[in-house]
Image 1 (cartoon, rainbow, N blue to C red):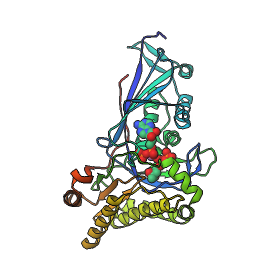
Image 2 (cartoon, protein in one colour):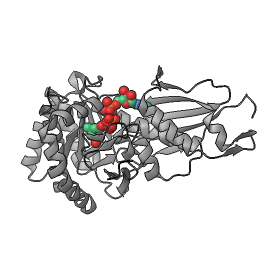
Image 3 (cartoon, helix red, strand yellow):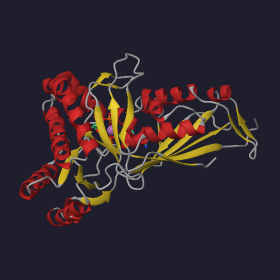
Image 4 (cartoon, rainbow, N blue to C red):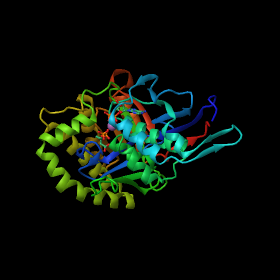
Length: 358
Ligand code: ADP
Ligand code: DP6
Ligand code: CO
């Protein structure tokens, strides 16, 4: 190997929003959850992470830049992902460029990683999900890792739990698994993005500021102090997950909306039941909920489902294009963008896509 080459790949990965939430770990370092969860993957053309990974004999150490600023890779999550991918690396050869990397070379070669989120980071729109899924996917391509998406999802999970669900498009389930080593805690696709393509997703950005309590520390505090979380994980989510799977299979919007809203509300109730309580939603979030509830009741059947992750920003899922158009119109009137809210609308997305920059 000469010293004057750089081998690189760029990947793009969408974020995903949980309709049955993951909140609570049974193992902090492997990131194993206390319940199954289900999410919908957004369109990568809108909310996504783009990550370029590069390797060169000239690089002295592993380094990473997030949104243009260098960040430390010393945390366990980054180290776990890098180690697991390096372990599975295979030979790479590009005869045209005269590059040949053997399996054993990957242990010595250092990486440079640059990642951008085109949406607010750490504001409750699952940047950690798109971010770690993209990192693992890009590294797997760079190092010619031959594992399938579910196996990669178990690696992305060790970066951020929600990231395991971003390797697939459509509706995705993270199976909590039983094994202590986490080998069966991975994501599977329930249906692809074409299965229910009349759904429209509107993201109402209430605040793009970084949240005060990260998801990681918020859920740790809930596990330590909330009795409601124990009840939720053991009694509520197992049944709700089965119902949600049925609902998605049958494209039954009324039940889908009921389950999605109920699960979001219970997750935020768990946050309130945590000591000290965690407030992810704000007044605007609460007004949005009341507004959607009132509208759905006045229509006789639900037109829109709402769900809020660990932040104040609303994810609104409209049953079809007509309901989405009405929703946008009403939001613009009742929640004018210039005051406290920005709007954008998205459709359900495909899985990670890769651009070969090698
Ligand atoms: P969010 O609600 O946005 O997922 P979290 O508290 O779960 O917020 O996670 C935010 C953290 O995820 C960031 O502080 C950063 O450490 C990590 N993260 C966000 N985006 C990326 C990315 N593109 N690549 C790697 N890590 C990322
Ligand atoms: C409310 O996956 O961000 O968005 O595993 O500690 O990185 P870590 O947490 P994270 O938690 C996501 C919580 C949630 C619900 C969900 O996405 O299922
Ligand atoms: Co997150």
